[in-house]
Image (cartoon, rainbow, N blue to C red; front, side, top):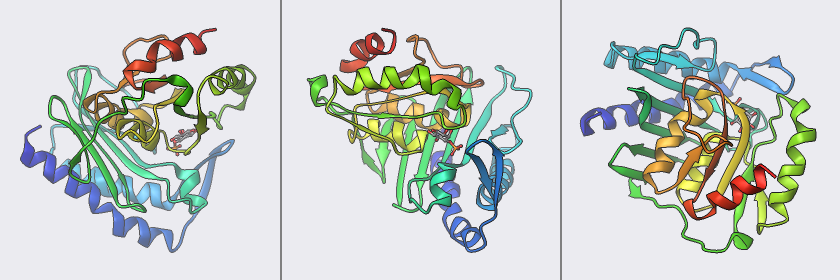
Length: 258
Ligand code: LIP
């Protein structure tokens, strides 16, 4: 993706801000499942970006959260879009929600944008070209000691049946690090590792649109992201996510797989 097209995409994502604030003035919430919601804001942002990206890049198909995610062919190129990552946060006016967009081509994510219009923070990363926050280069933290690490976790609120297995793992990690965080947005959590605000983020069974856009941002900032078995991410399927600074990968894999 050349620089000119990167700027075009970033501008298209930025243009979701007035639409998001406009749609929030008449917010309508629909429950998709237990603790799983969609709003008119999610739907409007997805419709806008589907049209805008389709006009600019007609050869690239779309995979998106709201009913736009069937028949994924690994040989095709796709935009992988979460119109609002952190929908529960949006509904609660928590200001930790983001538009997350990734470009999937030849089996990998080569470009990603994550934009939080509430904090006016735009993260992006391009394969081999580094990662940026509002235009400034970002790097993961080089913190040496895990006892001083800040770790963020995802509680899988849509699948509370996992809690019995999950929380003992989180307990083990908590007892060995400095402290925990929970933002409620996987895309922002992964970007917060990329810019050094935290050292790791983990969650089970995330959807492609929750993790794809941010994954290239973390990698280009010097971080690592795999599933809980230390395997490459599928991008076109759900996956457990372990995103972290390289120096803590070994201890986290040990604590996860105790
Ligand atoms: C959310 C993720 C979050 C996770 C939630 C949900 P959504 O995405 O960002 O990390 O805990 O279960 O998957 O549904 O707001 O796009």
